[in-house]
Length: 299
Image 1 (cartoon, helix red, strand yellow):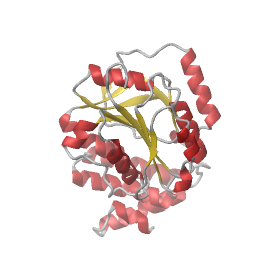
Image 2: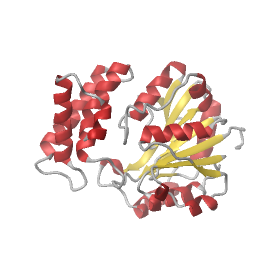
Image 3: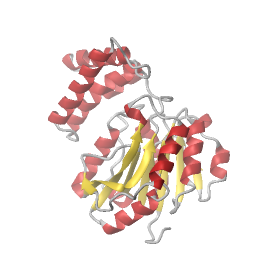
Image 4: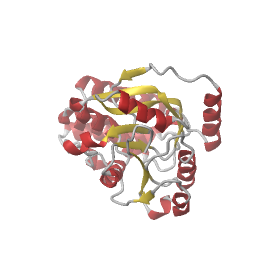
């Protein structure tokens, strides 16, 4: 446990990125405040090198369950109890060394906060992705600069799935789990989960929690499936009440417009034609009254 006595578990769901995961875990071992436990949930046995966990300085375990980000995160949640805080890192998220120490301070200083997410020094998901070496260089450069303002702590729309932490007692008391009706990549599952916790406290973003999201393209879902999810998942979340019609509409229109325009001159790292096809299939299903996030497993 850290200086304040909180028990913190870090959970990582992973698929198809064993080498990157190994680097992520080795970096996690350099935290100034180590997690009390590390739980890894791989899609397949080959997605994690057990020898990496053997050298981790704190208890580390592997749990397995159904493939898909929400299902894998639920397996991690089940394994995390009893603890105070669950931290979800993507398998390609490199945290600054003081991330967990600052996280513990935040949860102690703000008892009304049930979830918190950090600030990204760089996000490769918004472009072609970053290499491990690029991510490490960005981390080194940030540590040579000035420390972020500790007062930069604001309520936010929802936690960003690559780095987010929650109070486990709130999750347990209110029976909140990741929605496995959002299969595979589980697009927008982080927003859905955050919004179901909002009645019980604040979701905040802190500049004291920093890291690099490599945004590696390996292990991603297909373009057609992702394009279908870009429409189907917001429609589903409107019905659940965890996404407003306005925000869902903006999200769907922006993605449909981007895929339509860029499919003529697509970025090498994005299957724009596949995404546009998935968008169109979802719109047809919506018109026919049969749209569902689960349809992507059939595509």
